[in-house]
Image (cartoon, rainbow, N blue to C red; front, side, top):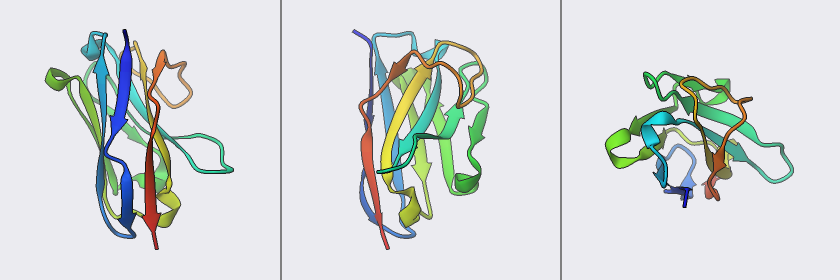
Length: 123
């Protein structure tokens, strides 16, 4: 059974940090590029960051550049999203998604999605 499971969300004060994890099972993880998305109440889902399977090339949406860092550990079948200098506008449910392709972007058709983890940043 294929699963992508997010963890690491929580409540943090503005300026704080969280590290999200996306753990995969049931797939050859190194074949998959991974994207992080988020959705706040009343908003559309937006891409946050993605990392390629081929060379770990990363991409970030403008609003998180310099604050968030995506990384992957293929030995642990896990992708991480380190989030620093968090702001109230970062509050959302964060989802990871996987695509079996060496390079992806936010518009790519992803094969699998996790169930999400809530991130709440208080002011």
